[in-house]
Amino acid sequence: MLVQIPALLSKDEVAALRADIDAAAWIDGNETSGHQSSGVKNNLQLPEGSAAAQAAGEIVRAALDRSPVFVAAALPAGLYPPLFNRYAEGHGFGDHVDNAIRRRKGTDFRIRTDLSATLFLTEPADYDGGELVIEDTFGVHEIKLEAGDMILYPSSSLHRVTPVTRGARVASFFWIQSLIRDDGQRTLLFDMDLAIRGLTQRLGGQDPSVVSLTGAYHNLLRMWAEV
Image 1 (cartoon, rainbow, N blue to C red):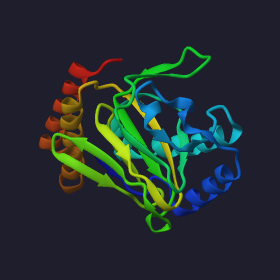
Image 2: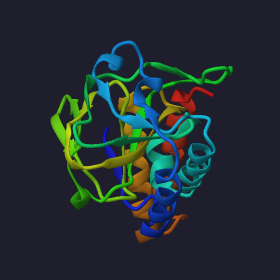
Image 3: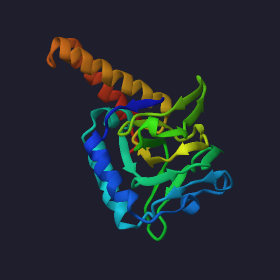
């Protein structure tokens, strides 16, 4: 399941965040690479423990907390603190699959990566190339979103970032452990959630069909959730 979340950050929030992180010191993006991806990754990244990365990460986390679409689609049980990368001219990231487990160096923190997220922080007109390309059973998807928009996709997907040929592409990226491990089950629950919201708007929350469907949703969540 691929889910686009438009305007997770407002344009003003993007501008303020970019002003802070653009002024910070960036390092080689292979700082967080796994064994497979280290050979195909060429970009820059904010150090995880830097003040700029932590402050910007809190802005992203606050936006996620107030996004009903994110919560419904991801059903998050854990979140890897948001990271930030920069692809300048000539930078790219070849085909890879994200590591199944992400650990924070020097801590006991770890999550299973059920979902990956990319939050775009550069307007598409400001750079050429840099598309996020995701392959799944439905084909190949090229994604290049407005600044402030986010794409959510299964971490098991083969994906890449095409080389940037003009300008620079800045984004936040992170991983989510979901209460629902299985992508098919998670997709079904998301579709049900959308249907319940639509019916509630039309019929009201106390309509018997809405109450019944809501009960079915929570019973499935109770059956499948890992807490």
